[in-house]
Amino acid sequence: MAQLEVELVPALRDNYMYLAHEPESGATAVVDPADARTVLDAAKRKGWSITHILNTHHHGDHTAGNLEVQEATDAPIVGPSYDAGRIPGMQVELMEGDTCSVGNATAKIFHTPGHTSGHIAYWFEDANVLFSGDTLFALGCGRLFEGTAAQMWDSLQKLRELPDATRIYCGHEYTRTNARCALTVDPNNQKLMEYARVIDGLRDAEQPTIPAQMGMERETNPFLRADDQALAQAMGMPGADPVEVFAAVREKRNQF
Image 1 (cartoon, rainbow, N blue to C red):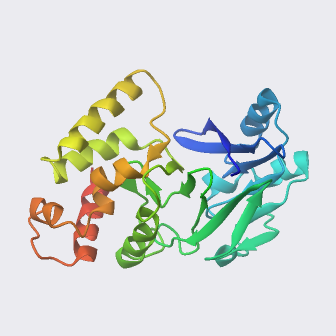
Image 2 (cartoon, helix red, strand yellow):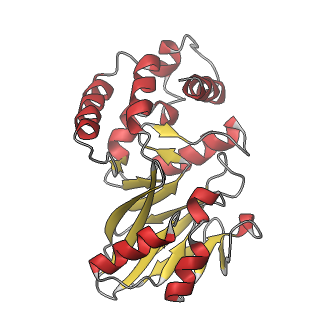
Image 3 (cartoon, one colour):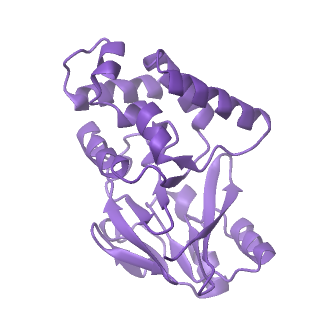
């Protein structure tokens, strides 16, 4: 079973880029290179050679470093076929059901529209690693810039089916604000309260809250629980369609 060593690389104000290193082959992917120089320096410190450039979606804070990283490494630029023409330098196009290998580690591709129309996520099953981009955050989800609430809810349902041990590597450090919002919509969730205290401790120590774990997210992330009647009740929406509950939670987060 191929494993991945994942190095979190902060960029810009609150972005996370990642280096995903498969030790048996030595292959290393950079995921969503917002800042080429920062991630190239991080790879050099680790002694890793970048062999792949993986994009989850077309936004510039996830793709701005594509061409410079490629120029420095000759690594192919990989991304969603749905965003052909919007991702700088993309050479390998992926869609739902495809696979993508980094050395001996292979990811299954999910199409996860909502934040953008072409967004994809990479799930490395053997390594228990999910690169979710801006679809799923710790205790949150992405804003609906190009998609609908129904599309995002469908995308999140795909991801929440992954195993409890799945480590979630998302695109931004939004967790503390997400937790504060989540507590306003789900105030009686004991696990959420405990999770929020852990998050506060990490952020007070200037430590990342990522990776999150799917098992905990499934119990505490309100965006994954729109079909849970306890959450609907807490939102004052008993019996409402899950898409309506999801949309109401998303609107509350938009204003938070």
